[in-house]
Length: 103
Length: 256
View 1 (tube, chains in turn red, purple):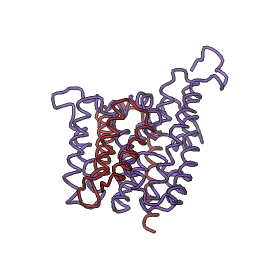
View 2 (cartoon, rainbow over the protein chains, first blue to last red):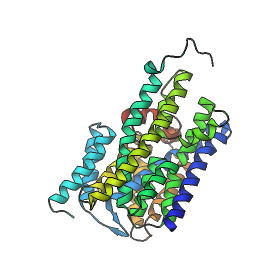
View 3 (cartoon, helix red, strand yellow):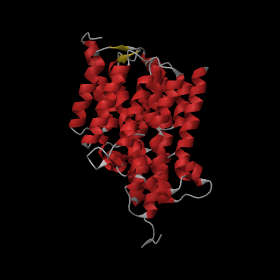
View 4 (cartoon, helix red, strand yellow):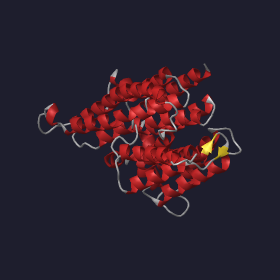
């Protein structure tokens, strides 16, 4: 039940965030500091999510097939593969390594 | 806005064309969100409500990612909210660009995402900017929701998602969303710092909290950046204020 509540909170916050952009005076966008924080926040969150999903299991740090997925995705990105290919490469690497017996 | 000639017919409209292709590429990817959401312990209904109402891919994956790691709903909502902050910046840009009026404004807000911004700002003609925004925004919305449902239903039948590497797919998806933003050394430094903070914090903080700590560090770096010698603090933030069009060009459908 509490999951539903937090889903509701997340949805309301997300919509109000989007709407707020349409209501804010345009001058704020020209503040370079605001634009900068928005940029670093997105980068930091995505970096954190990437590594957390790679090595974290609960509160433990675990090295398993997910690391292979990270490497495979990195290679695909270096080769300028489209988004879907990158995702498939990550899944295939993790699935393949597990097939070979890795955790 | 003076348009030099009559608007192009829809079939030849570049805004419509780009919007449709982005909508298809991104919409299909909804399958993996639906499957991952169910694998993380959400119900099919919960996955679908997230796609309908939250409707921002990065935030949706963040929510599910925190839950999958055993994190609390509050941490999941916090991560989703923080990751959605950039949509406010997009809203400001689109409001200036398209000037939606009346009831169109709250509707435009809901479909304000990476793809609709990228499609719109990629066009130079005001008519095409408007078409691009609405076709990409509404198109992604329809297909993303349809394929979320399909993914959630298929996810149930898949069994252990780890066998199919779905956790690896999530890792790859986050890296792919991050990748186009790492064009500058400053951006790379922020990413490395935040990844380190996350790894160090994982054993000591409840799941989800390390991501919020990383966000605080990232915001601090952004706030204080530009003073510290580089003189180009704008560069790191540039992708939020100008760059998303490039992102989508390189990785179509890269970030909802």
